[in-house]
Length: 259
Length: 297
Image (cartoon, rainbow over all chains, first blue to last red; front, side):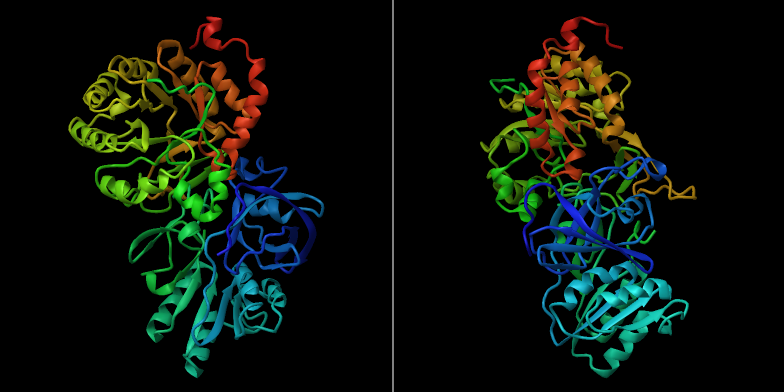
């Protein structure tokens, strides 16, 4: 795990692109994170005073790629924080703290990367380090444009069948495990998807590393707000995760997420 | 304060900065650039607590509501696992303690008092006394009884953390002072709640929580001014401080020093920044609100 420089810093936005339902940005930052780590982000200006007089706190995002002194992030406008971040323009700066938390560990057997929606971000970073099939699920073809971030064409399903097969990404995972179950699953996505992945991997006795999400105020263990229940009690997603072994969880469905 | 000068210092609010987790995140750079002049621990209780069920956070306009529920390792776990790590910090350590009975609190203070790594105590009295059902810090006589029980047990400075959820925090401060408190700190969080959008279901796992951040600053400032007017012991002011100018307002209201809480969530080094900004401003403040003799409401 890469340590973060102490404090937050300003990072200049050098590129902003629309990619289907998402906004992809690049910021300048010399610190090289590990896939699955994350950052707390806020815009330098205009952070606050949006819908419902928010945002106030920074928001947590895993980087989608880190190379040549630049970090890539993926935003989907779903609330006051992501609304402001997705509206960021080239030349603006973001407040950034990170890299935070612990990322993905090495695979046993082959790697299977399973992503859903905005959760594909840390898997893009991981796909630069490990080889293996990439299985993705999206709501629509518009969201599925994010598949182009991967170096090789992933296998795709969509909720509405507008691109790839209509169905759930766990159906693709089941087929892969039927073929060869000597694998480690790396997954990130909405809670219901992660729970389906966890349950399937438990049933097949396949190790899985799940990148969790939970609403958090700080990202560095200060607020104790982002806890999720595990078999060993509550853990803080920010410092004890965000990547956790699926076997440590009774469920990946956490109150307060996916809303 | 028993030979300890708080003047102009920047502390952290208890439970808003976990120096052990921060060191895991930022490494030894945290120690080299430690953001506070005194480190106040998370509140410890006699027995371990896992804390409240999630969700524990809700963002408000200019702040947040938390319902964390004081998760901690308990006295034994604190002494064995946390204290040796906190002793490595480059600043004096203040241990925040809470008991559900006066005996429990006394047991904590007596045990922690033995450790020379601990410079001072903060009593978190924002909890119900299970014997009386009263929130200890909401009632002057209850606060006095707590402080009287603790005072003979330690020669270290004892700060009483006042709750703003009291009819008259200044009366509570005076009671704490009369019973031997060396300082008071305020404000703790204000009670608040939120609903899951579009429903009548409380969002927070514990139903309600405490509001902090700039949203509470004006309220905190008034309470600090009112307490400073009545209490002779030093007042540690806090509540939504996010800049040197905000900190200066609390000194103007009569606080001896300030603490930074929620702003550290947004900016881990906020304590250092606020101290730097405050030092740039301080010569400009010639007289406090208290010294001005103006009526405070």
